[in-house]
Length: 416
Image (tube, rainbow, N blue to C red):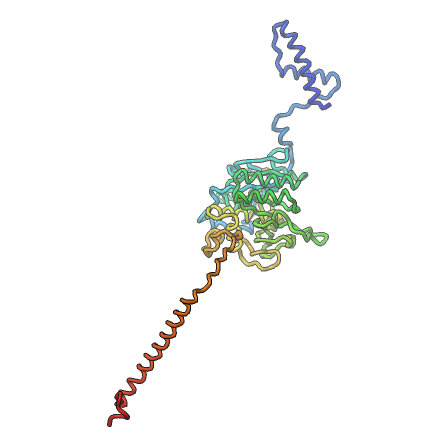
């Protein structure tokens, strides 16, 4: 029997006793006093009493994430490479909801103040991000512009709203929970879902992706990391490898594919994923981050900018626009190349981009047999037209020549 069940049983027994005694003595026992008495009895009898705990401490157990740094020195290289502030002339992502399905988000961070509008905990460990991963991802997407206060780091789409879906605390990352997180994000009205998680191909995960896509949700997922030891993974990562998902590989400073970026996944585009700086749980920052996990939110931020600027585009069109405006590409595992935020938002693409890129049925018209009578008449008319044209040409050529030579019809020879 647990301490709490013992305490409850003891409290019930004493409460009944005091109720009977109270009727006789005109007293009303209080529940708090009853529990206190019971706790005292348990201590005297040698049974350990439960320590006093608030509801918050029971829901969100204490955690100590890895420490970050207080300040960021210099402009992070991805911001100089992507130049996403150029896209802010047209949109900063206002009105778009981005779900971060990850380890939670520290909504109290100064650069996320007011950005996190909904929180879901699927782990039962509380909404707090004890890992830091989800907070870093959310920061790349939506960190406020605090350059006026001397903070060089900022997010791609600072005016989006963030829905934090905590599906792992790093000790338990079941695929079924990831699938549930994607579903919950779609139900909460997410326009874009960032999945910086790699998993195996499973039926419930695929069904969750299909469910979200049925609600026109753009899913942006990490192409996955290759283990540096042991030759690396040769299998695709999911949900990145599902149809319609924007799969993101990692690029290094020289724009080439990072050595850890999984080329077995069918990559849509790449984004900076090495030597990354972002915000961290507790109000600070982390530098030196790497992985397709951190490349993914750059593309999710761009997808949010596109959805804000072009609200009429469906998920397939958003994917196609991001791919069509990427830089470079062609190398294995890089897809269409490095994502280009300004071009993705502003480029004037062919009309075909405005149509859905999903497969459409091809309608073949019935072959109509030719009308033989009309065909004969047409051939006859054409023959007459050719003959008349030939006669006109002949007359136009010969009559002037005959006049020059003083030739007259009906007279044999020429006039002297």
